[in-house]
Amino acid sequence: MSAKVFCIGDLMLDIVAQIPTSPHDLHLGNDTRTVISTHGGGAGGNVASWLAVLGNDVTMVGRIGDDAAGAAITAEFDALGISYGDIVKDGLHTGVVICLVDPSGERTMLADNGANAGLSLDDLPALDGVDAIYITGYAPLAPLSRIGVLEMVRTINARGIPIFFDPATVGGMKDVPIDEILSWCELMNTLIMNEEEAIYLSGSSDLEAALEFFLEYAQRAIIKRGSQGAIGLERGGEIISVGTRATQVIDTTGAGDSFAAGFIDAITSGSNFAQAIERASAVAAHCVAIVGARGRVGTQI
Image (tube, rainbow, N blue to C red; front, side):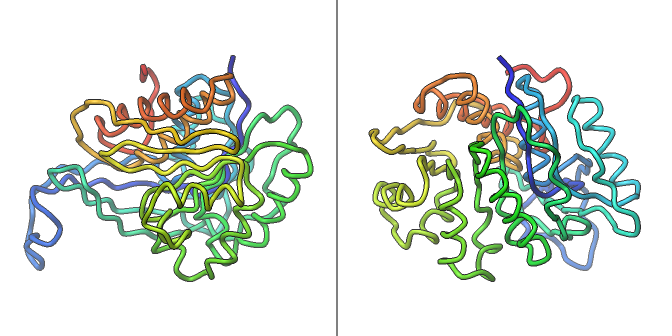
């Protein structure tokens, strides 16, 4: 059974350069031959794409510019059947990320937030029939969007709709006090973060202790550990540990976003916590085996 899910957050055009060496070894000031491709990106849009590939009814809540990059994003959404309403903003440019992907699949990103800043409660469509909400931390971390996104969260909370929250990168969080970010976590149902983010927010390098810490704020917490899989804990339960699926790693861009989509898809379909983490891991394994951060028309998982 498909779920109706809103994804709130950033929309970007990703320019992916598959470089032949690590970024540290590039010949700066000279030419480097590489393979370059463009893809829809941004954590919010990435999660929306994977949820759509998995058969859900998805609406994207975000902002793009009236430009070629924005047109590419809406064309991709149209192909995937993702609703997006009035996201095109005149006079603004679409956010763009340049992703340098080295031979190991590791990525280095250069980001221009563009039109993403400025989300407000007016951008939130009617919540009738919505089963789940995904919010990326990039949305409230953006100063111009913070008030509007938190107003959205309070409106969603009043309707009793579960929110799945990824607090985003440590680099993005460093401009906001940790206590303030944790106050946002109290408004969420499920927290999904990577190991670095979990350590930063909890202050503990003991990941099991970190999970216990996060359950003071939310019903569930999941820590993604890259090649070591993921661990999770929900209130009243036991720690779940899941390994990664064997796959050829080509590009890790969007791996965490696909993991979140897989988890939301499984939970809203009635899977238990452990099954949902397993499903999330399977979707992430598919993502890292392709170039780009998003699922595509015809993707089979």
